[in-house]
Length: 200
Ligand code: GDP
Image: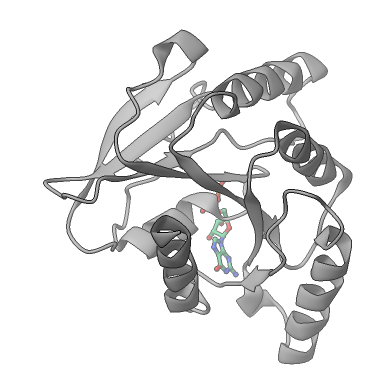
């Protein structure tokens, strides 16, 4: 599924600027610094795919990556990181608007993966994003990042505690994945989970 070269294909800052829907799409969301770029790079085995677009001032955009010459046509959407301390309410509102507009009517979007730092768990700002996804009735799954930063017992504890927080949310897939891009932890399992969603 993830074999073969990936390319950056598009960046959208406005909703009337989205690339046409081709094949299936999955999207990645998370607070700034959650490890989103690292995880996308680990999944696609490309060292700098998600970083190519990491230029300052371009944070409020949706980045689209697509496999080159691939029949199955999976598109990965890197959503702008949220919750950065220096970002004001206005930017948060812009983020919410862009995301809301993107989610509405993107019929080929199979799932949104909401990344949560395993050390911190779900914060208020993450909760607001989950709320947005629930309201938009967009299927999403919570994925813990940086699992290697926790001891095994804490990894289990955080995974279970996070599951307890999301299990009653209407649009949440009832499973929390634990990953570490640095150690490759949970990456094959994450790829397999994505494969199942795309096959649905
Ligand atoms: P993004 O802002 O969400 O795209 O996050 P990045 O992928 O750029 O990573 C942010 C920071 O977290 C960097 O300093 C990474 O080295 C670190 N990081 C990313 N993934 C991991 C991981 O699996 N384990 C640990 N311990 N640190 C990580």
